[in-house]
Length: 301
Ligand code: ADP
Image (cartoon, rainbow, N blue to C red):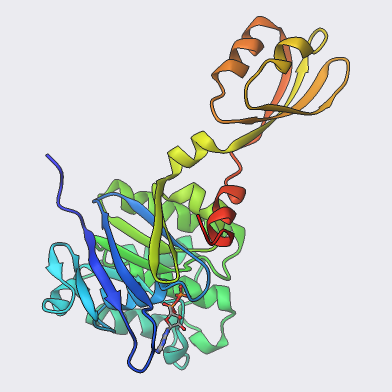
């Protein structure tokens, strides 16, 4: 049986007062429990508008949206209790210390566990006694992340969550996403960092000029993307066999070493490797940057 989606957008449209064009036009999508959904698109595409509608900061012009089967306008208070939201802009709270900010946010949200908040503070090496205004952008961002996750919500809505974080803290954040996913939470995330999207998302929706132009699973994209391999054979490179490989482009070749790019299915390459003794292989991960960039660039796609 299909589970009830955690987030739905139903033919959602938004036209700002006085604006001649739609910021969002007829956008429909569903996000399942335990799914991490990346919302991607160039600046001005409509991502923040959709997020603001989910939080009832803005109201739809046409269509609607639900979170946990509740209408985002009619049931907005109950909706907010189910959401952990990171806006990426903590400028309202700069005079508060991190501790005061978490206490304040905790009062607006359902019960939180002090032990879990302490764990998050420790994991992110956050500095709760300092005023947010005295912290660097990355150190401030940690408090935004902690408040979004601290009540272990069913739905997380995260607007460019890792901006400013150093690589170790980014890693900690990715672990947190995985833990939330394992507990069945759904995550709606906007990001421009392709490697991040590839690492944490199950599916992406690409939005441009207010329209959802494509939805893809990351596994599907990885299946289509190109992979780079550096291979050292014990004997001579099996040049002839490789030349028959569909989707294979040889970048460089010497007596025993070859560097090649494979597009699509890899099983035919592995069949050749199984027949020829291999000493060393460096397997590059799928490079999705190009796949994503096509959606950013190509107006007609
Ligand atoms: P994104 O988050 O993808 O960068 P936005 O949702 O902020 O895009 O913007 C979508 C479109 O709506 C843009 O054309 C933007 O100029 C317009 N827009 C955003 N906010 C307002 C507003 N308050 N009033 C009028 N137009 C707006």
